[in-house]
Length: 135
Image 1 (cartoon, helix red, strand yellow):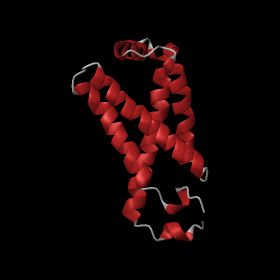
Image 2 (cartoon, helix red, strand yellow):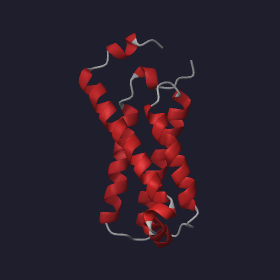
Image 3 (cartoon, helix red, strand yellow):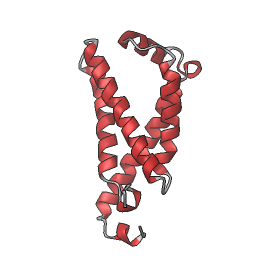
Image 4 (cartoon, helix red, strand yellow):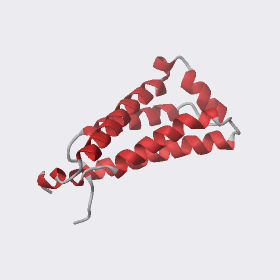
């Protein structure tokens, strides 16, 4: 695909995409830092214990989230972008489901729901040059 296809995109859509995607990448890095126990002073481990996940899940999640962050911003890598969006979507949807299953209050659902919406919006607003196709 050529860069001329992106030129037909409305400017407001491009701006919204880059704001949401930049925030998604920033939040992915921030989230990953909380997942490593030596950085979060046990906060994330406490949440994992509360919802029934083993603490080693944080290392897996942290590494995956840290890898996804630059993929959202890097040009090209269309298939990896799809996987990064899917993994991020699954992470936030899973967080919502986990908090629901352990009967946490509505307050615990707000953060994951907002980040899930940001993930979906960033994915939906992608310019054609960042979309994967089987062609």
